[in-house]
Length: 517
Image (cartoon, rainbow, N blue to C red; front, side):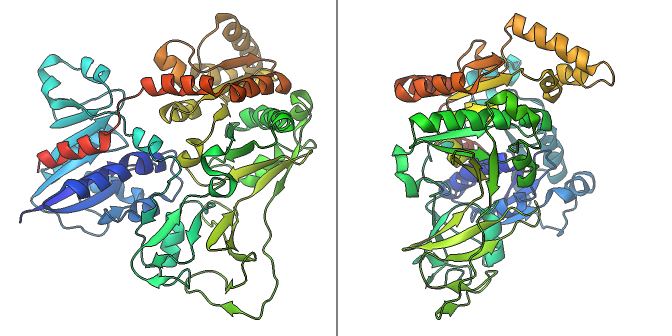
């Protein structure tokens, strides 16, 4: 049987999880050839440092090259580990710069395929394109149209997995450290104690086999599954956004909790943001904007490791501390050395282990779970609604078809300095930035411009954009209105979904790749 190399070009954690994973699964399911899958990572501004671990955690992938060796490979044609290449192969673009596909394809002498969401480039030199929607094909000169196939939306694979992320059964590397890295950012997962495991008895009552069963719990399993009323809070990652976004969303959450105490809240923490920094924006003594945004502060709560000694202890190979056998005690403490101290704790409960995450606790005791892995698409896709600032968050939520309300508070004109593009550049000019911020603020409010990406895509307001001197109770009333009328949330989600492509993209894209082998 002829041997074939499939080379996947990708970059960030989002692409690896939402694009690469479903495609490599389909490639393995469909292939009847001797196929080797290699993932080559390129530099990404949104990288978390966990990309290699994520890619290596996929059992379908044979080898992974870190991003730091990308330019060496691109310019000199040599990988860090001096990989061998088969004479025949296909280069598949799933993240990064599409031009890299042309260069790598030429260097290796392989056929090339690009997956394109919104625009496709380099038509002359690429063999095949799989695109999200027909509109992408319409932008291409007719003589290249036969290279294009509408495959649909790879993000649909995420939406179809609500409540089962990661996969219910997953093969992990043989070392516990790699296993923990594959969990990406030390998150609140549940691993069955009777799981069959290949990780050197990470969970020592495991049977000897070669897989570990991971069930997505995070909030979900312990709180009623699909009946959980979960709201995502995305206050931003830049200081100027956080200074208003954190106190505003905390105050909104507290108002909602008074009326609907069953509601749970999460904040997906940006990988560049330390928990202590986030907590400072919730501290009234460190953030004067809290007084303008409802007066609700919060304190950071990080679970502390219990030191109780028990008669019955066992040393589980590869874990950082001994695991006690008594259910209910904290089992071990994980620390993310690459991203600072963002601890999580493994708790034994019945037949499962659960990792507890840090929280922000408001003055009235409302808890907001802090999710420190990136990206947290599985949890975001379970949210009934998200409250978010402008920016890339709106594009991600729109891709997941998650209903949202976009908040643009103007209590502090300096907030304009956190904006992207020309307005942000002007507002940050030395000396005159504040004046520009005032002018831009006035013009924007007057013009009624759309800022959320789904609204820009649709050229109309699909998701509400609230701009002005926002009052937490007013926003909370709107949220409560949506929660009381779930059909409105369904309608918003359907409209967001209509902006994207059809499901089944991974299967069709794999077919295109294999057709070139």
